[in-house]
Length: 266
Image (cartoon, rainbow, N blue to C red; front, side, top):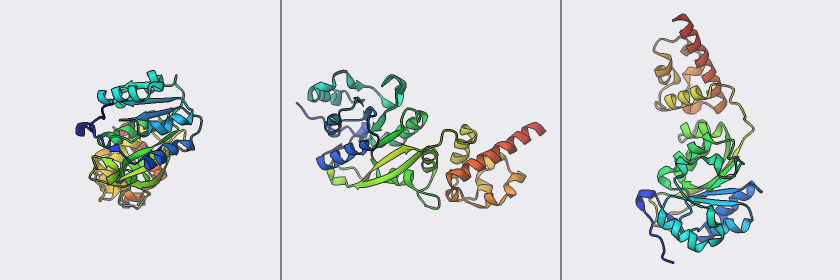
């Protein structure tokens, strides 16, 4: 079989270290019995360690060369090798609408988009593991008060417990990326309802972090306007990076109530 050359435009960095591959594959053991969907298998370095777990396994790969390689290397997968763009897929059709574990050595150029897709399908994906850029992993796992705590941290931690498992160095890839990588695991928390308007919650989080160095009193102006009495509350003395997920939920409810009052008065 002819090896596949990594394609820069697809963000491909093929993992060479088999011990690391085994360790990443074993992260799915935290969610036993669930089917597994692997995103971006490339030449199957993770796939070879997922197959022996004796669980339903599907892999989705956009690169036609990698798909051809996988079909030859893993004939036992047969129709479970899907040539498609994960970001455009209807995930409810994969395992007859049943929940599954998401895993992979994720393409670095779309890793954040993959996790936003996961959030849209959070009831289908109780567990997600895999490898991403170290910087993104640190952002997702960061807590309030950290410089890396931001939009991704809040939106993910609202629904998932995020664990930073271990760091992976550049030299174990072909080609070596310019940054270090990390393996993470995300497991759905007990939240079924946020307790606020979800769309407004996202808007509040994104709007305030877009000016993260300013206090909420200033960064919330695009939503509340300039002279809103609500911003006299002590909460608005804080910067967004100081707020927990629950405080963002509380803030969203305050904003929604204020907007409702404004609409009534108008």
